[in-house]
Length: 256
Image 1 (cartoon, rainbow, N blue to C red):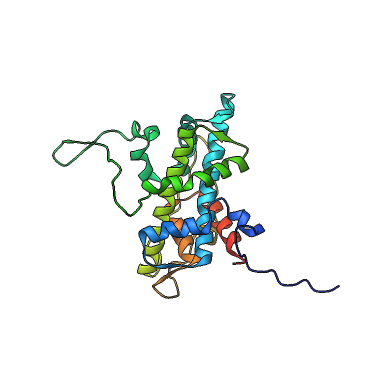
Image 2 (spheres, rainbow, N blue to C red):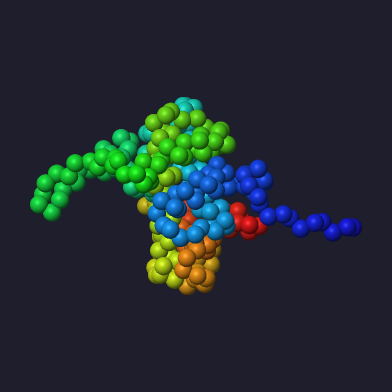
């Protein structure tokens, strides 16, 4: 039997491996990193960040879909997003978006400063440099594509919230990855086992299945794949979501 030729490296979103990471394309991911750090982002790091963000959004959409089905609705509404987070606290990510979204604003409570004066809600700034909130619209096409791939549709307000969560999460992931590079590794770890009252706690994950290396190799100017994995352990505090995100990111980058 003749040997098969070596598999070519992924060259773009039209390849099978790229479709596994879609809907968040490399140029968009790298643009988010450029907003928060001057460091170079390797191709495998961008794939890993796209994969982790996709995993998180997929889990959120799955939880919201279950909530909608219980009410015999086909379109997802912001209330389904709240239900998904209530049922699974692991999905509470992209927290910086919450202060800007009408869906979450009523849940975050009023805020007071050190003098006891009410702090008004933050408004969008006119900064030239896009923040996670100002740049959230960049994710609309990807979110809609991800919804279609899951057989779901959503009202515009729900799409807006998914846009914002994706943008805020990826921005935080980029900042943490840059911190990992600067500090030479992850300085803290943590795994939280979640269980409902009266239910037995789930068995702990294997240590190597959820942890990224505590010490990194390489220069201090380039964010690599392992830096994204390390940042993921910071952003996702434990449980099945973190394990799945790490596993899928490794699979998505194994041929890049």
